[in-house]
Amino acid sequence: MKLITERLTIRDLCEADYPEFERTLNGAQKSAFGSGKGFLRWILSQYAAMDITHGLLSFGIFEKATEKFVGTVGVGDHDDLHEPEIFYHLLPEYRGQGYAAEAAGAMTEWALSRLPISHLIGTVDTENVKSQLVLERCGYRFIEMRPLLIHVTNERRDFKVYRYEKSVGRYLCKIASLEEMNAKWAYEIAHSGADRENWIVWKERNIENFKLGRSIPYYGILNGTIICEATAMLCPEIVQNSDGLVDAHTVYLSAFRTVGQFHGKGYFSKLFRFMLADLRQKGYKRATLGVESDEETNKAIYAHYGFTEFLKSGKEQYPDGTVIDVQYYGKSLE
Ligand SMILES: CC(C)(COP(=O)(O)OP(=O)(O)OC[C@H]1O[C@@H](n2cnc3c(N)ncnc32)[C@H](O)[C@@H]1OP(=O)(O)O)[C@@H](O)C(=O)NCCC(=O)NCCS
Image (cartoon, rainbow, N blue to C red; front, side, top):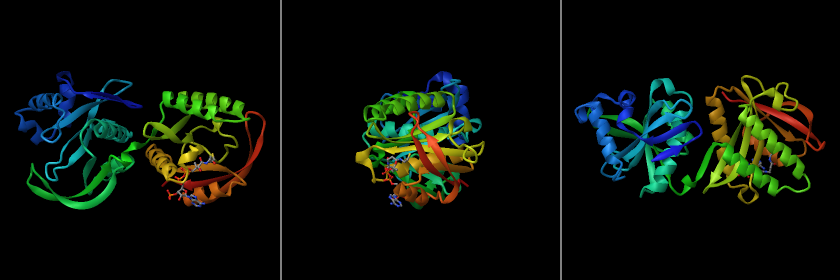
């Protein structure tokens, strides 16, 4: 098995991964098979059957850029609830960069599409807020608080139980890849009208900004089709009237679009909240956006999202010279 995400590779473990893999194990895992190596060999022996009812599937997470071992992610049978569950473990030096959510999201999609299961659960100690956020960012829904038995120590502790249903699991929010951007821009250009030339210029600019790390495009993908997008602009050079709209702690949000037939179904909100959670996690403290002065519905939607702090008005120019009146609003991400 091999999955490739924006920054990670997730693949079958092998014996050569051992020294680093051992660092993810607790005492019970090491002793269960005589040693950490014994535990790794047991994991390798599980790949052929792909049976998570009687075993588990655990994979290695590797940083794409460095090929270094980052941690493990997998699915198995919850030993107390006996439901399919997701688990993940990152080495300490790789925490706090969104890798857990990137890996858990990809694992969830993979498991639900490849294994005979209709849902996954995630159980997190009530005090482990970071791990709860990982599940929430992957679209897991909080179900209940439950005292669960920890078999190793034979004690019961309170856990938060989360659940991800296959049916709702077909909508995925993620940072776009270059390939996905090319597909989406081709769609937008094909569906443009008299302003086609603007869309061609916007495509070039957006792809260049992405390649230079000046912007982050977020996509909502339904059953494999890109239906929503929003872009976070990180540098003043690429934002018109940028004063007060973008700096080291302030991100400017733009290019909000849902494909027509999917309007009003909540897809954009899911993407928007995913984007804000990601930006918050990247350290941004404030977000700003602009709305055309006469777009009352959009203003109401943004106010609903908390963008009520009026910042200023300004004029923006499209590539073809069209000038529009824009009002800018902001909100704290803290
Ligand atoms: C703006 C746009 C991206 C919203 O996408 P969408 O998928 O229809 O939005 P959603 O269905 O997720 O709804 C957005 C949120 O606004 C809320 N909302 C909708 N209409 C509202 C209104 N009139 N007043 C207040 N809130 C409103 C919804 O309840 C939802 O919030 P919730 O999830 O908390 O309930 C979409 O209408 C679009 O693509 N418009 C054309 C392009 C555009 O105008 N882009 C913005 C400028 S770049």
